View (cartoon, one colour):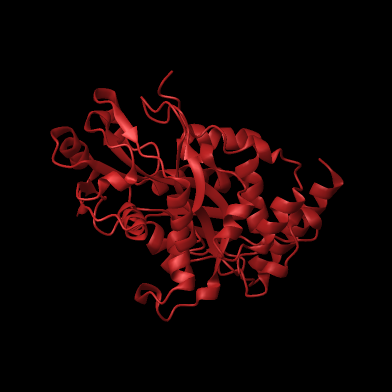
Amino acid sequence: MSKKVLALLMVLAMTAALAACGGSGNPQPATTPASTASSESTSVPPASASSSVVKEKIEISWGSSSTGGGFYYATGVIAPILTEKYDYMNVTNIATGASADNVKRILMNEIDFGMAHASDVYEALFTDSEKYAGLDKDNLRLVTYYMPGQIYFTTLKKDNITSLSQLAGKSVACGQPGSGAQANADRVLDTLGIDCKREYMQFEDAGIALTDGHISAISTTGIPLGAITELSNTQEIRLLSFTQDEMDKVLSAYPFYYSDSIPVGAYRGVMEPVPCPHVPMVVITRRDIPDYVIEDILTTIYDPDIYAALGEGYGQWKFTKPGLEIMEGTGAPIHPAAVKFFEENPMNYDWSAYGNNGYTNFND
């Protein structure tokens, strides 16, 4: 055991002894945020920068989604890994109403970390949405890019719809009311001025309706989507590409979107890249979470072996990458410890090796 580790253990032992004599180092209930962080906690140096940093025992609540949702599975994979790796933290997966709810809970100090769409972050911080009225908008910080939310429209090849403009006058399924998919579909259609009949329904129902000819297209966010995968197994599908002009209009209207392409084989029958807007999904936290907590979490996520295990545990983690430029593009503040971690790369990770294996080529 190194002298550095021994020294740290001695400090921890002394801290524990003081706590036994009336200190405040006892764990908190799992449902409360990490109260050991203060408003000046971002000035605490990362653990790797000083062996004198004492990491007080804290409970970390991580907001995900409803049970069975993607964010719930993703958080369910990372939480036990962090808890097992670090003696000072216990991470609890908190079932929530997903993205918008997680943003609201961060602003209200009800959770410590969460998964969110950048669109909800933007709405909370930069609009007059009543949903977030009266909350501390300076309380939220970004930690890392998690995965892309591809915004795309699926048609059947037999219907000969080859462009977004041809959706005018037709029926388009736009997701369930109140969902992120619905919000993204409405933003795109409104921005491009496409006058179509918008149907709001579950994706499983939309797949049946498209097959039966009751609708002409399905707008979705995120890949893979089970309903589209199943559709591609029985029908020849087409994903509609955005023209450069259409892309420019959408990105100019909504700065939290960015441009990218769905690759060949993302669904069976997709034979060429499909340009479309993407909404980033991110990990969020509070401004008062200590630097060393952020650094330890990022060190864990991007450790090559653990990163591979996360991807095997839940495939969305295979998309995860630093994404510093994408996060900066949202306009939302990034936790300073995260900026430092990605810019200085203290573990010498090969950033180019991350986020490359999220897609499965279904044409193989």
